[in-house]
Image 1: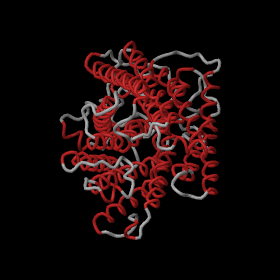
Image 2 (image 1 turned 45 degrees about the vertical axis):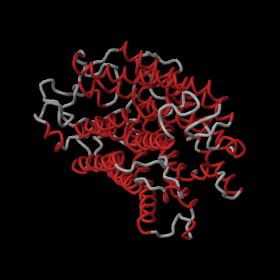
Image 3 (image 1 turned 90 degrees about the vertical axis):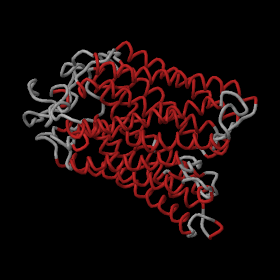
Length: 527
């Protein structure tokens, strides 16, 4: 469908200025990509510093205060600057219009503005590293965040601004999905990645304002001394937890739903088989988004809430596992008797399924009242969270890079290096975080600068695993950069995929399609 003679989005305009003023959704996605990957590098280095400090008991090279600061920045950068914006801002921006047969998003100027808003918020956050820093943890828990002399106000305002960017992006994606679909592209024919991005956009628009209000209240309390969360002023610190987790648990699905959309694309492509249960997978994304608003209380079993509330939140938390399990079983059913090829994106998809299954099962364990009382604020929670966020979202993110890289840049990468990166990341991840389940069961508390001798051997194993993860991600970076410089020219459809983005040239032209596509079948008509 694309013309080989047409100018692609990379070369259509010359000069750096054209990138920073471009309204092309593909260029804006690349701007997000460069930003997010830069923050990922910084946050990843901080993760390695944390694990290096915990290699042995006693201080290694960080003080208690500096450890708290590194821990806070690692969490804040990874959550607010990498995992939440990562997949929607990069791959949602680039491929949502291509998936539905549109020439761009509904509001191109708003799309560019959202990147500038995101970068302004990120700049505010980074600026605190050079002032009084911050040591509250990424959750900004009161009452400590009210009393500490660190740069809490600047950091929460930074998170507020980045949240505005998230809302703008979500609004754009919702309108684009409803209004710009190609003729014949009904909601029952849009790719499952679009369903995932659409569900995520709803969460972004509805949940993010709650976080914004909470952070503004925290800033107001510090600046003006009003009594909202400070007990000394008649406030309630537990109220902050209610507000924060009412946003932050839906935010978990802002992070994971786009990843699930990617896995649906990878599983069907590399099985060469029509996805099993398209409708169930599509509606399960909406189901996850809906139920996620009613489970925040499982973060607060030991915060003094009533036993009745605990039982209700326990039930609702387990309920959210139902639409998640629908996706998992439908992916497995798609694999059954499929013509499976184990290209690197498929390896990452299978890795996602294995790691996310562990994250999901341990999430059910933490939803159980009796177990959570023991595991609360231990390394069991750290391991669970990372199996979901890193084993889930970041595995899907890397799989998406390998899957869509030829379409984005028109260059093929080294499959050997891609598979090698998977081995390092997958093995390293399990070596890093599985021992932390055991540490948590043994009672090792999280966020602590030091620990007692019985925890040492498992911490050493965990730290070695973190080095393997680091090597794996650097192999990914080397592979992708090398492909840009010396990679072979990519064909328009190297994987034999069926969705619309593979019908245009690689990389796509500025307006995506030379002629408006007309859709007459579903997105996965393999066999």
